[in-house]
Picture (cartoon, rainbow, N blue to C red):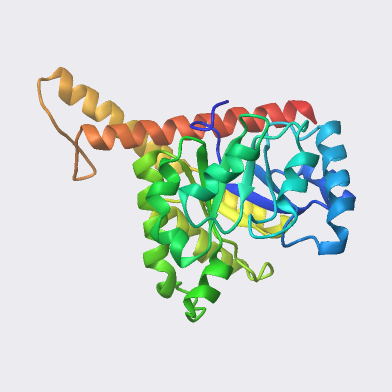
Length: 291
């Protein structure tokens, strides 16, 4: 499954130092896991966390879940030890925090011994302003927005509607779509607030994000639901495609469905939605067969 077709509805942070959490992740219905060696691990625990994480990755069992390791930032004394400890590990990507420029990506690439994909955390004003050039780096495969750090750096208020962050969020999306990389929305901190999480998931989906980064397993099901095509959306997409085909066969360039014009661009969007639904269904079947 390529990065273009994989679903990224739910992307869960897992502390790299906690064996129990690493084990539990093998059975969670999550699309991707961020195995964290940065914020979730104290400085004194980092050496042991590297060994714990390398052992877990060596044991495998994570199925189709995308395995992303967040290392420590380039400004710290720990990042080189992180990548050295993971040199022989089976993982899909390395997530670099606090990326400010494509030069940061290149610095990491130069230190890597394998052609593993690199994901960038955009969580600083400079990183947001340089989002397009970061996305354009040939090894950049994905973005994760660090909304907590970004809000701190911007000195903006935390609001339920995230209005102070919308310019930054849309800048990230513009860059991601211009360069063809995955874009994951930031975390929602109040993991027991279902209504708040649903709002942010729906907002992120409507903006165009591929999925939501999560801090607790309780958030997975809602993110998976919101970022997946609904039954009604699938039915509408099928009707749009069929109506446009009939119109084309009759020599017409547009169709009408429910009083709305359907052109070729709408058909492309509808087909992409159906493809996404199919991939999600196939992945669910694989996971079910493996249990």
